[in-house]
Image 1 (cartoon, rainbow, N blue to C red):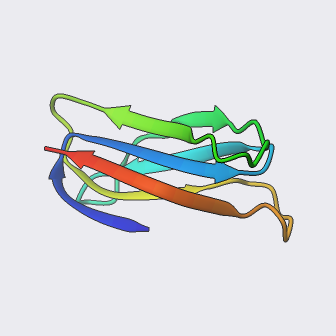
Image 2: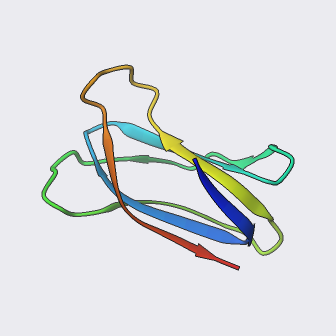
Amino acid sequence: MHECDNRKSVDVGFIGAMYSYTMLVMDPTGEVLDTPIVRCDGKLDGTLTHLTYSSTTANIKKISLGTKVEMPLSGIYIKEIKIER
């Protein structure tokens, strides 16, 4: 979980296995603003997969990133998090 303050957009660049990853984007009250989903290619060659959410009115407080696959090797390597006001 990553904490943000009064942010309008977030972009997470990561490397992961060949799964669909979901990012929960929440406001300060814990309400889910959106749940963008992306399928990672699983090549593990250093190419980043990005999950992005952007809004002109949202107040992003928290994000959570993961996959629903319950496997020990379904890890994720987050390389960058970009947040903007």
